[in-house]
Amino acid sequence: MIGILIGTGLFAAFFPALERKILNKGYFGEITWPELLRVNPWGLILPITLGILLLLFWIETSKL
Image 1 (cartoon, rainbow, N blue to C red):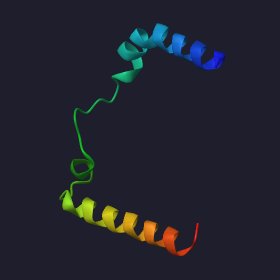
Image 2 (cartoon, one colour):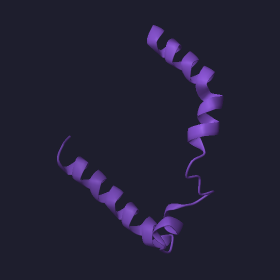
Image 3 (cartoon, rainbow, N blue to C red):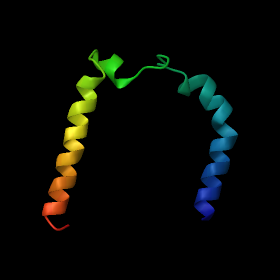
Image 4 (tube, one colour):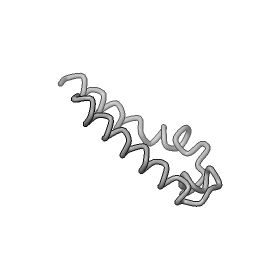
């Protein structure tokens, strides 16, 4: 608990300097996965949905 409080305090103290020097490097604006991969959004939605359904089906059938 003490470590969490110390870490939070240090982060709060150093955040302004971090934001100016490090955190804004490489900021590309609001970009989505479909824009990054240059595909139709449904080209990601359908395979991810299918993967989640298969994972859940596997968990259900393997008695985990």
